[in-house]
Length: 341
Image 1: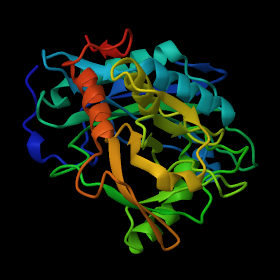
Image 2: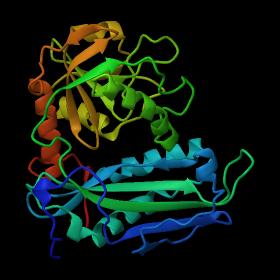
Image 3: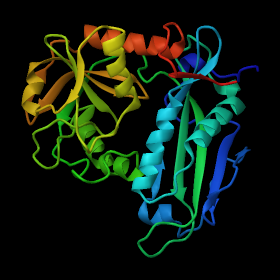
């Protein structure tokens, strides 16, 4: 299929409407088969559950053109699993995981003209999401739901190259210890908006949230997991019941162990230990790894040895290896790459 006439090299990280999206409705206790539609508008009642009580969950993933010209996506089964867990936590009907993957692949295929070419630095961002659609005025779960998959071509997250971030230790709480921090619910991201706007006003790129109970352990940012490298070369990520189980983070841990031969573990990380780390990054779908150069804890600066000019050496190897796997230049573990046919 001929690609759309888009300036791929100068594409930003924003929404560009594509031709098709997938829509399925849950009504009378069952999901329908779903359809691909050209209508990008969502029409719901003014009293819909999502508008009144924020009953919505979502996922984020990407489709790529590999070095050999194939269109692929990365570990969609894990996105399906995570959305099922998110839906169950908000008392929403689980969209079947096999149907989730099928819907994602079908939507990518329908919009293949928008999948950027290999080497452009751009990708097709895929956003599956679900929300309560029928009128709800009492505080209770909706009875009807809509599951949708939209796509949009996006440019590289770092325009003009990677620049290490400066982040601050945040006084706001992202999630309660037994709350919803471990699921991908829209309400979690709404909770982070004031904190990130405030951080930007203060000159910081992001927030480091600590555990709400003791304010002593590293958790995550508003939209990404932390990854640290110790001075003896070990890769460590925070362990907590209230952070999102990032697919990128889990993949990077496996890459560290199996491709780079590094020791890697998920464990509790005290804030006090951060000053002794060699490298730090924020990992997620959008950028894979965003390097962190400086962390400011209420005026006290923690400057990572990796510096403010480029990624640390191990972080860079992790980034290059995982993106190589995604783009088809490095052999992937079984099941990681799913071709869109």
